[in-house]
Image (cartoon, rainbow, N blue to C red; front, side, top):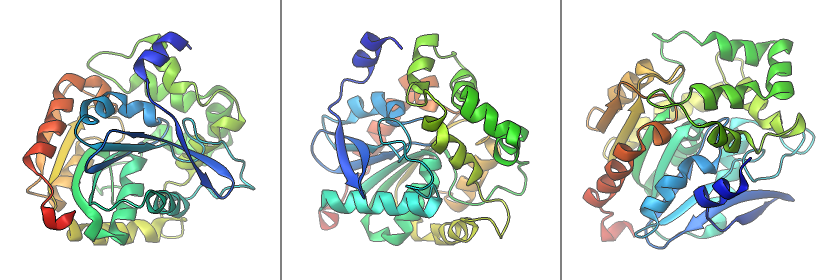
Amino acid sequence: MDSALFQSEYPFKNHYFDLQGLKYHYLDEGQGDPVVMLHGNPSWSFYYRHLVRELRSNYRVIVPDHMGCGLSDKPVDSQYSFTLKQRVDDLDAFLQSLQLKKKITLVVHDWGGMIGMAWAIRYPEKIARLVILNTAAFHLPSTKKFPYALKLCRDTSLGTFLVQGFNIFARGAAFIGCKRKRMSAELRKIYCSPYDNWQHRVATLRFIQDIPLLPDDVGFDLIDQVENGLSEFSSVPMCICWGEKDFVFDRHFLDEWTKYFPHAEVHAFADCGHYILEDAKAEVLPIISNFLQDNPIPKSGR
């Protein structure tokens, strides 16, 4: 990895929250109304670096790395459960530790959508605005077939070997995640750098294995609760920025979001993929910034 490039791309102070003896890394930049950004799998807080710099002049921007991801600790299974509920509990403990007095704007991507919205249904009164980036907060749409690549990684020993042995999921996501213009090799290395050995890829694999598809799967009931609770946010300002060439979170997922939130501000990019903040950075950063400015938090919500 090019350390000079990393420092120039990610020039932030690192913070750590003690999560039952494990270090939970996060960024905390700027001042003002809090904007919490939640990444997915197999990315990390690095994904939000441009948006952090875009917003930190006017907002307090908080970006955690989920446990086992990014610059957070990489526990083994005996130390950590790697379930959706655990992820939500982690976020809850972390946000409570910050003692935020103002309503929160949630920015969510990939698994961050399910984690963030599962937290939001616990505290709907704390949500001021929502920014949705290629993610879900509901079950697999009936019109969408579960991708074979995910099924391979989720359900087979070969998939386990490829994910943990060769980092195929992180490498593959970085390689195909941008469609308009492929990431440079050095940028892809930075995305993959936290997942540099078998043990450090446990979370990558567990995230895939934790995808609930059937009622008996762990987490299925929690997704039911989140899906059924989405109506709580019908009046919350929402901005959706979407790469339509995402191989998982494609138009089928976007259609679900617009079904639940017909009044959302939607910006779909037909030539972009999963990593929309890389693919359409020039367009999406000002869209989000303008959305926040156009939807100020009422003083009664402070």
